[in-house]
Length: 251
Image (tube, rainbow, N blue to C red; front, side, top):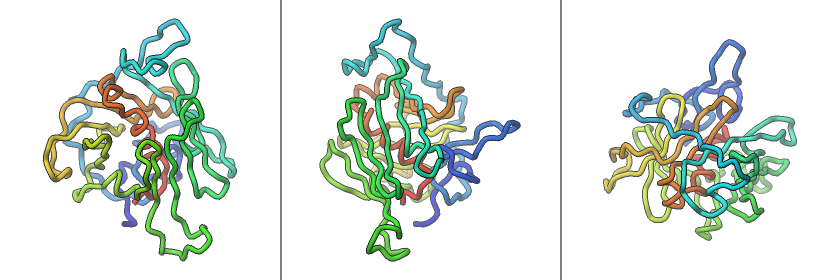
């Protein structure tokens, strides 16, 4: 599939946003680089309260240090310049409220492989962007990007893990044998738990927002609710954020 569902047609990848001008407000996150007409979210932006940013402990600790879900967690994307001098989530850190890196994302100079590590430099996931630049690949012969998740121990196509629904209104994510749905809501992309419907395209998400990718005052933010932490979704949300905000074709 060459056309990727997109919330806004980016003129140039910038965390998956249009490059903002001084007179324009930040654009919506995008699901890829080949835009189509988006379907409206069935959940208006004012129908679901935003996850509040975490309050300060006044100490250099975080619930993430102890695996506790005491409060919502906000991770801020801090991008570095890649080998081509561009800023992207593919060369970035996801910073905690105390400024320390919770995840580090690095991409090789050819842009073929992206590695995601946690703050302790342990491997979390690796994305291989199938590309005609890979030796032996013919243009158009690639099967699409693949994802290796260390926790799972196997490789899968990104299009299978973040499956785009037939009506192009959501992407289904599977983690710990449960289904979740990434759906647009205004200028954000939000994660909901799904019901037991066999067809994710028609499954109704609950009113509980588990996670959100949005544009905050200091840049792109990834937010997780306490329930998301209890469900052990932190790594999966971080991987999803990298894929959804990469500006790359993930199908």
